[in-house]
Image 1 (cartoon, rainbow, N blue to C red):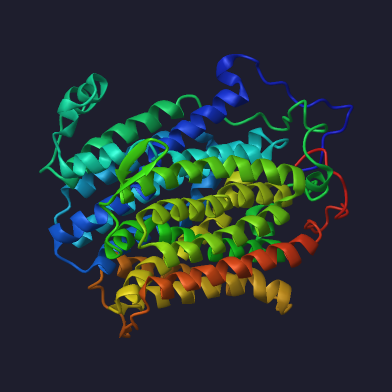
Image 2 (image 1 turned 90 degrees about the vertical axis):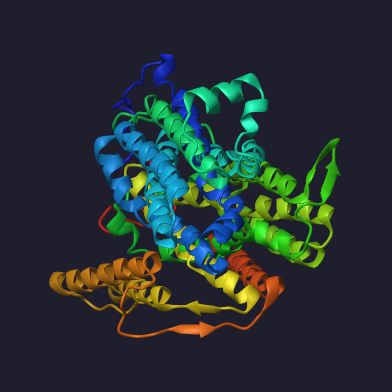
Length: 539
């Protein structure tokens, strides 16, 4: 959309507390905190689930892939619903689904039931995540990096203070009975349901609690009026950032027809791979190096190395997101990306080299998250800069699917570390479907100048959608028939081999950010009549 002229003032927003954009941002952050454990608490459940269900760890980690795929790949559609109908009811539904997913995970007695339960949690968490980030981009065009970072910090750091109690509840289901009075009242009286004990109790009680928090936070959410802009719009932010902001809003279809989007997508996929590996594999890696239960003392705190690492990682992961976002508001998104991606590569390398030392394991796992978490503030901010704010929720939803693409590598990483056999059928189907989408919406019309008819494009996208759904079905239901077999035994690369891939991805992404993306002019919407170098007044 075009910038409002000075003769037509933007709509005013009530200054009441409930309509204040910082209040709305706070509610979004709280909703993100409440769904953080669905991803960042997962690693605590891997070993107990493996013992209970008696399957290979790689199959347990497929649960995490299913969660991330559905948490990310449905966000474009969910974002479209939010842009059309508003955030409140959607986030309430997301809270119910996320909580239900953990409750059903606590009752799952087969690996398929676990996949289905965590798939429900993924859908719910995706609704909450996409809505919260989209809301930040819409309400804070003058502080996009900071606002997106604060929102993403809720998801990154949300589990920092709950890792220890969840771990205790897994090892001792009645732990809360001898804890603080508020904890005893919450988990003993308000949530009397407990499951069979152990990890089942943790899934059920925390699922109910976290789902309820999201529903309450949703009551405070709303979208800004059409055309609204903050009074500080023309005075805040660096000139470098403002000149990179598009003066019109791109629809999602227009966005995916630009090289900017696909370069950002590839970069986000590569960087997300290393971070997600750390998220999913941290507990198994600590066990492998035999440091998980060794006490570590830092700043007068003493905890087992794994528990300490998980808590510190979540805090650092949350702290870094608004920090990197704030930095990007001042020096530019691409320069900040190059710095952060390079730092993550160095941190992963040192982590693997020193992981047998409990103290170094804690410190450098934290540095890994410090260099990774910023993708969830920098990429949404840059997406808002390049493609505007009117369709911000849906647009970032498409970019956010890069995290889902990266999640496909997680169970492969487990199999590669141990030299186990892995079934690649689902990955092959997902890859073919993704390539078909890329060809239909970007490569054919823009790179190769092939004019696809509407029917041809519709057929390609329908077939791609079928293959993607088919691949997801094979992931969730491994016994699903396919016309080909693709189960291969992977070489035992160890943790160093697995994370070397992540290091390489980080370094490539840093180079692309600094030497390629930074040199590209801001995208221009065809027919808008705008130049790429305009300083914008509205996004």
